[in-house]
Image 1 (tube, one colour):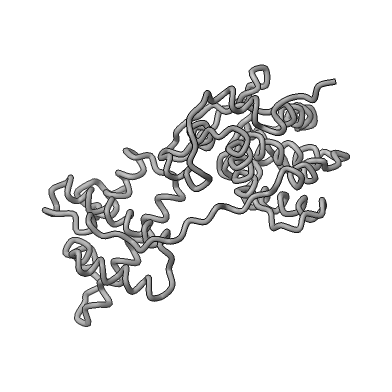
Image 2: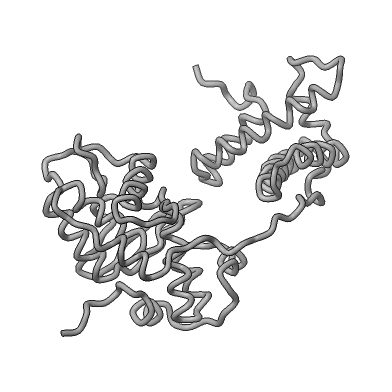
Length: 309
């Protein structure tokens, strides 16, 4: 039987808040759960007279000093700044929730910052390497599907999770557009380049029409392709097409962003296309000015238009 709110622990109520009010993904929710569980266990281990049954109270009573000590220990063990920042974000959110519920008087994690990690430019493929990859033979249904996947990754800069969750109805090929649900369930409409459109039309002709799933990309068994399956197919074509660089879906996303930015100089447009909530995330590519989104895509993307006769 499901617990009512009076029986639920503070952490369980917090997870409900993240799931139902904040609408965080299951992946993000799992990360918060792991972080809080790790910190709770660390607090218990600091007290030789600790009682496992009272572990909830340890989180309540944690102060700024204990959080700093935990982060410092993790840093000494080799965890990077990005991982530590995520763990701090989990703690801040949890204590903000307790503060909102009037369970505590102060958020002890609010003024603590993780050591910064250097932000290097993501690894990308050059246009010639992308062309070699996408000049793949489409002599089987599997290859036709994979071609559509690769073209769409590069055409629209999708995350792996975004592409895997696409349904057939996400496409509007008449308008050369795509509806994507990204992080925090935010929807954005993206242009689809001509090469990707042609590949998708070809795939839809060969996709089994009688399968029950709505997924755009399906396996031979008619099931939605898993994240792992897509990663393996990307790796397969990297090797098949003789690319020396290690290839994964996010490298295609990075290549998309880099090539658009190099050609257009429009940072704001790239931010919108990538679905970044904060432009500082996009600034890892470079710092440039704003122009019109659709015009940038049409003029800048190497595979956005048909070749002129």
